[in-house]
Length: 282
Image 1 (cartoon, rainbow, N blue to C red):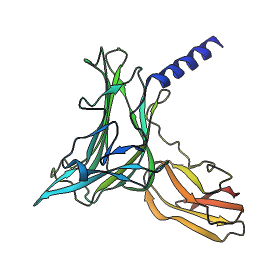
Image 2 (cartoon, rainbow, N blue to C red):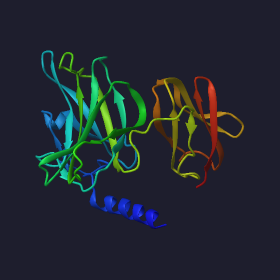
Image 3 (tube, one colour):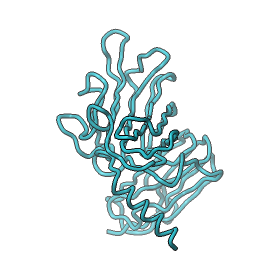
Image 4 (tube, rainbow, N blue to C red):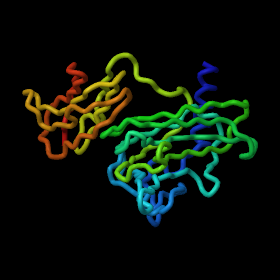
């Protein structure tokens, strides 16, 4: 019991001492997300506000903008002020969040990175980065695993996102990304889906305005998602024959116009169907 209490106290302390600035990108001033620095130029067009949010009402959009001729620049943003770092005490294992990605060129990528410092922001404590090149039309969860190397306790952190192309150095002007709902994790590294499809219970359930369907797939698959009434009639198609890579996905469902009653949401993965009930109650 003492070990459990100590662990809970540690987790609680970490939660209180760390705060990603504006993690859901709900707050903006003069076209820029509060607590973040737009490092691409022109700032006003490479990083913009979107109402296609994972939750809440706003998300961050990374755009690619023409600089004239073949030259382009991809949107780039970094947490914190000019230094790029915000105060954070504790060696968090992951930075998590959700994204939608539309890359128009096979060489374009979404760069995600996170780093920490210790000793009053002087020495590097841990960091990691990775590139995503698979498009997703619905929100997909990501997780950046932080690797700590020198044994010190981090006191500051930076997080950043950028659309890049290291082949031509000019990402396609039609490429873009949405980022939303960042959080810090303390108990797991990069979350990998298991070897089976997982369909979670929708939330909220019952729902009156909107519910959310979350599912995980262990590998690349063709996915269909739909909402049906109790008789088996398709009420709302949500995803039709979409090719998706392994990961955890979320699809919002608008139920505000549906009659009260019991519905069934179905997720078909390579033809195998998984389903659960959703109650609409107003």
